[in-house]
Length: 284
Image (cartoon, rainbow, N blue to C red; front, side, top):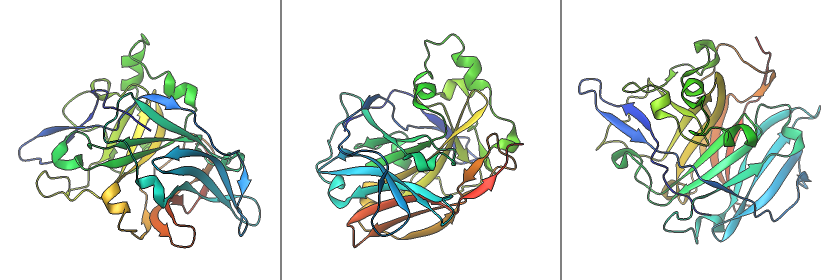
């Protein structure tokens, strides 16, 4: 899988006293369609159903959904085989990304698919996010909507600037100061939001391992994005149930995650990225 920076970014002010503006990239590109397994493949030992598997590095990656005894989703996520972190391209040309479908059993959640980007040289600002890492966009709109986020659309600027009402955004997540939402809009993705309460994003001292970004487009809250370094994953980390900041209200009824975790499954030899603690929320 290959990708490249599209020259877009999120501008972050990471030091209020100096009002420094940085660009945060979360690459875009063309989709890859190399599926190696069918959808809705059940796990053998629990109520987990897998989406189609695709090649990544020397291994593969797939989505999954876990259900409770009543068939309601309790978590969604990704599983990457340990070999997926090897054999990754050192550059990202031509621009490719993986678009990973969820199994049908995830339909009660807001998530449609995961857009996966491998960034072998990191991205701007290098002082913050220069390490090789993965961007995992858990998209809450379909692929057609993602593809339609294009500067060729005469409504591009208006749709970028049309943010959801604040109550529909996770607490503290904002368009970074320094430029309009439209100026920071990313083709094929949307407008990225950062946690304004995160005081760790200081160049020279920030130790990038993992972070959660959120995104919007045309008045909708459209994705949750874990960014995770390859270096940190190789340590086989255990990040247990880190709370996800929640909106005050929801635009669509469904089961939404309340926590996020990353771990290595020793038995399966897989890295697991999970959005869990699914809770039913009514649109309001």
